Length: 238
Ligand SMILES: NC(=O)c1ccc[n+]([C@@H]2O[C@H](COP(=O)([O-])OP(=O)(O)OC[C@H]3O[C@@H](n4cnc5c(N)ncnc54)[C@H](OP(=O)(O)O)[C@@H]3O)[C@@H](O)[C@H]2O)c1
Image (cartoon, rainbow, N blue to C red):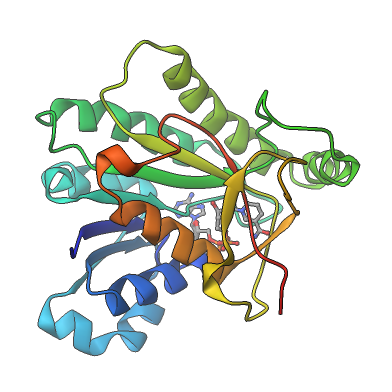
């Protein structure tokens, strides 16, 4: 059944693939980005037939734009994430904290499923040990301390949620290690924990797009990863 999806970070590298696939699968899409010119160029017909709506603004002005429309969505997919070495601030974590409280203002049963991505710098107690991941986390911490601060702020928001007794909003944080664009089959996405059950450190963005959209298409009773932070990875088979 077609869904009404809000995609945050829709103009970024993963976001464009998610928007494209969501439209191909017949969903109604609202996509947010700071600069959406790439989406305007790629989806002129979806924009004119109303299947795609764009929200272009700085993240600090996003709340007033989203507040009146949040109840329309079945799911919110966010692939926002710090994307420069000089990144500073915790605006993304603050947006998520605000979103959770806004979703709670909506009538139960009308609260969109919040599906977002972050990094494996967020360690889950279920994770196994992987030396490459530990080194990678240390490397990122050293070269991009601001990005790490944002990631840890996102972790704090959802760790608090996970520890609370509140189970009135469905959310999932998919933790990624290295994203690629290698043209692998899109169906290969998997969820679980680091160094367990065939985990590998990479995922194709097309596989991420497919995994997120398939999750967003599920009915509440079918959602396996609600209130959890699974690692996501891809199939390596060519
Ligand atoms: N790339 C990787 O190898 C990797 C590894 C681990 C985790 N991840 C996670 O995977 C997801 C997708 O990553 P990606 O590499 O495909 O995407 P990306 O191109 O880095 O996209 C990140 C998106 O976040 C937006 N963004 C960042 N800071 C923002 C801010 N302060 N206000 C508004 N928008 C902001 C960017 O907007 P602009 O285009 O306007 O900057 C962009 O649309 C992210 O959640 C990321 O943290 C990626």
